Amino acid sequence: MRGSLAQRPARPGVPDAIREASRRRTFAVISHPDAGKSTLTEALALHARVISEAGAVHGKAGRRTTVSDWMDMEKARGISITSTALQFTYGDAVINLLDTPGHADFSEDTYRVLAAVDAAVMLVDAAKGLEAQTFKLFEVCRHRGIPVITVINKWDRPGRDALELMDEIHDRMDLRPTPLTWPVGAPGDFRGVLDRTSGEFVRFTRTPGGSSVAEEERMDAAAALEVEGEAWTTAVEEHDLLRADGADHDHATFLAARSTPVLFASAVLNFGVGQLLEVLVDVAPSPTPHPSVGSDARPLEEPFSAFVFKIQAGMDPQHRDRIAFARVCSGVFERGMVVNHAQTGKPFATKYAQAVFGRDRATLDRAYPGDVVGLVNAASIGIGDTLYVGARVTYPPIPSFAPEHFAVATARDSGRYKQFQRGIEQLGEEGVVQVLRSDLRGNQSPVLAAVGPMQFEVFEHRMKSEFNAEIRLSPLGYTVARRTRPEDRALLAQQRGVEVLTRSDGMLIALFPERWRLANVQRDHPAVLLDSLVADVTARFDPPAA
Image (cartoon, rainbow, N blue to C red; front, top):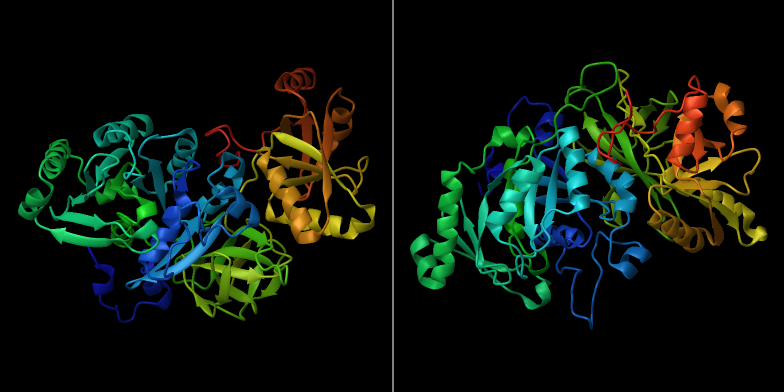
């Protein structure tokens, strides 16, 4: 498998968009919190030689933060609370890696990222196995047909039996695990891996603190037996059991999201990370035509088109600019080109376009299908919007999740009301929280709606640090939100315990204190529209209702 992409010959006469798309691998890393996702992201960049030293140094005396975790709160807490785009080359491949928040409170941000990728790397803690958040994220991938590569991480620590973990993936996820590597050494005694394709032993050597690429040595089976003895014999026996059970990689079932290649690694020690990069290049799919609304998928070679899956501000504290992250779906993007904004019908000039590597940015002159383009200060563009050149195309919108937590925000200092309003508007556009308003409450007291309470913490922190506008949050007793219509607003407003507000996108949202109260209103007024904000398919990870 190694280096196969770099050996592929150029294809004369093939349009640039198709040729360059075949080099792209656009994927997200998903996991439960603390499974090592950001550490793995950094280790991949380290192995691709785009950074010289890993940021995750776990000694107490000099702990660093990862490139992908750039916000102050991420550095302080050691968790990812916002998605990050990293682009780098590996051989002849162009890797677009989208790091995602691990915490369930930021699942809406993760869902947006999964709308923009062609594959996912699912990280599983060797000791804990499949956890709740991992399972939910996998269900999103299954629903969207995203193929998944599984990495069993933290094999350098005590953990569960490898065959037991394979059974859990098969039984709980109805997904056939097909290991490409197999661990040599028990959990906590990680010697290396058996490459199940070549039969070779890949032995790893630790580096101080895991801050640099771990040295690898390949040896044949006879040499491995001599060096590792019983540990190698056990790995070979288990490999034979897997082969007898038919647990070998099948590319068709992988692309159909019915099987998952599995690798074993220790991201913090940089063990097994090089194998993951090779598998991504050789196995993960390159971009294909993206489904559009009301027509066939737009071919890759058609003129430029893209959709916005994320908006982020505050990445550059010197300029406080706003970046719209757009996934290129077709054609060739060239900086400075004028594109059409499908939602407004207005032209948009792309003079300020950037490639992003964590917090660092560089001017981007050209991009191809699968790439992520950062459009700076695109004030008129929102999450889910489509940009295109030539024949009109509109890509499906990205749904907002049904919030379950609500609080009124007010400015602590009335003299900073302008900063307060600017921060509310900008962070609402980013999707940090949903912002709800009503004539009764006024603009000075908007209601913030969140999937999880940590979103409020992020909002409060960013209002203070980025806009110099400290806020006071007063929790509200609502737990259920439903979409409604203007003609039903007056009747709902008369119901005890019910409040109707307008979301920033114009949608009317009715808030209820409990589900039983919602049920009573629906029973007494069956003609009133009270639709779920998302369909009930995979808990919070759902597509919009048809």
